[in-house]
Length: 463
Image (tube, rainbow, N blue to C red):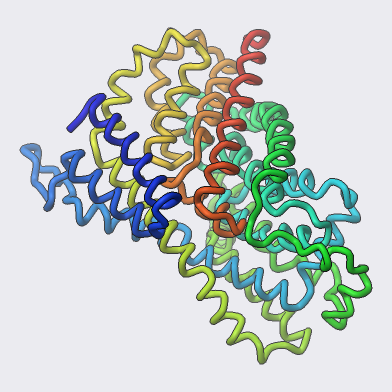
């Protein structure tokens, strides 16, 4: 099956999946895997590997499902486990509370949502948004307990900041690839500047949306009123003594710095043994492993090493469901990308090209919603749009950069069950899938539209 019927079936499949999860209480893992399998059959993916006349091999449905599952595990599985373990240790030693107190001292007790949003935006410049949420989640949960702020508002705010930098600002791979395809790969500083500029309105929109939705949707880890009213001294007394500032922040800061240094060297194309070592240490898995080592040192300093086994065991029990549901989302995305849907959308792109700066946004949003990956939406849309830049009036360096931003805005619109970041935000944010759709998915629509509007306004003045 191909063409509009396939797109219609895809929409029906997503609706069915939502009903299975939210109305009929089917576990998300089972619901997503079932929908992926049925969609793969209907889309015409062969049951077994098939050799084409040109000698290429079309993967069978079973292999596609396996590749989607294993691909997600290989990219984010260990990162989630190590990040969650760091969070468990920071909570056990009181370091999370110390970090929350440091943030409050910096931005004030009345601005925790804004603090998390800006923190996420900065961290996600060198770090993938999935990893960034896992790394910063201990601070988010501690701030929820410390300030009584809405857990949903904090999760949405943090996710928004991470998401914006992820799609707008190099050295994240998606914006770099899109900029290179659009012919401005040698001017990444300009792309970074536009990424920062185009973040202003969506950051503001996400902040107000986070505050609003936090009053309407609740999470399972909302702060207990009696806990929030405790004085700081009472909270400290529960831990005996809090770690100092460096010990508290090192398990989080060191991985971020390692990944940042690695990204900068890669962008500068530095080579040599030292660069290779930094690149190795800067891969998310190794960087988080180094962070875990710092956390274990902190646990030992607090005299709680005997609890390390149980902490690890409980962490693995906690992240298990997150890993499997996230991997199932990867299966759905792989099935869709293996169908003819993306090719059909790409081949009919010229019908949308009269929309100017909104064309790359809309095309990227369609691809994002269809297959789940923001990076795939960025790179695929850039490849489609690049030959059309003169037709769209976007062939100057400045307007090509605006086009890159429009593609990035679409690559956020919208995040739902076939996006691994949806499951990271909802599971670590203690939200059910139904609440995740109301809070996070709707927020990504707000983010994308706000960004597109700002980019359109800029396009009226910048040539």
